[in-house]
Length: 452
Image 1 (cartoon, rainbow, N blue to C red):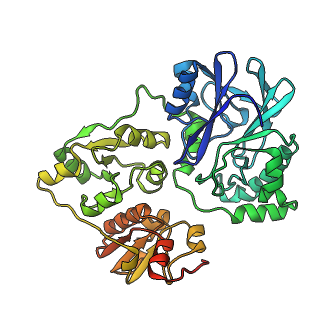
Image 2 (tube, rainbow, N blue to C red):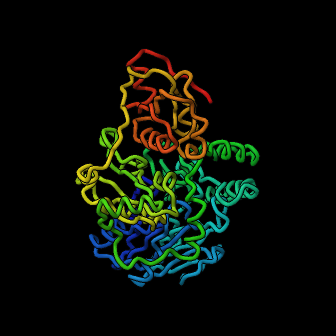
Image 3 (cartoon, rainbow, N blue to C red):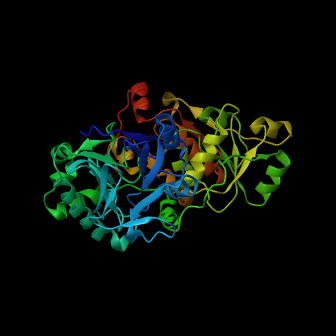
């Protein structure tokens, strides 16, 4: 592994890693940094480094790039693929192009597959390849998904991914692998704690690299792909045009009860970020439950409308800046503000609330709706459970059977989001399971089923 100071900046919620590279002369480079620049700027400030370069491996679908913002506010030089045709100032690189970083060099390697214009960046210390920023190409134990462009382009991109991975494996075995997408990313990565690797380790352990036959590789990669949030289909083009520059940190404007009621009547959507138990006890009818946690951004982008004003309800102890940043980094600039005083102010004004029952694993009775991802459901579910992924539920609420109905996921957060969507669709006798299939099996002695 490299001795160059490369600092991973992990976004646990999106499952991604950006990187800060200390160039050894008071300057730094960041790679695949999001518009939420807090971690990158804090890391650079602690080390006394100026952010001289910002490299993007591809046109990101899962977050807005922070490269243009850095260029405008810090004078940072943006490095990106010339084939991406970005509409803002940047140094467009093609295969084999090199950039002098002041002692270190960065070489662009064309590695299409995840996107058409994808580059990997080989970091060279003299003539020695120290590591490679693989973005959405070679991942730890996998490769990134190839179905984000268009259905008719997926097979060709998957075959391009096969060639790109083979190209990367021709690097020396001790070269570090620094991917952007990791466990938890909807851009496809297997579960696991490891976010960095080496070429040699991936050649020995990555299942996709064991597929010598291209057709087998294509079948294996495409067969591993799950669903992804609809906002993925918008952000690539926003990143190509250049995300709008932020004049100040995002925040939540204060909205009183009367203003919120008027906005709701005009089509706004309430997003309740409180914990599951608080939402269950009392919430505004029609509110969408998305508890604030690291994955808040992903589920906001999956479930909340991008074209209607969003109003946040939160607990006093929840950080409004975190909510605003998570929305901003995925392109949700439609946060109108927050309900001042939260649910207490709503009730104090005399307006009605509703509640949703929570049930323990031993209390499950009647129909069960499991809203987890396809692979999670296939790995183990309650006998007879109906399966509709949470992301599909807004369009399939009419397929869900009548009440009483227990909604479940792995812990309860996603299930409460599903219950709130079903309540919007008119379902009433609903309950949310506080646990998952394993909790049910341990409590009841029952056996989970596997398969689709």
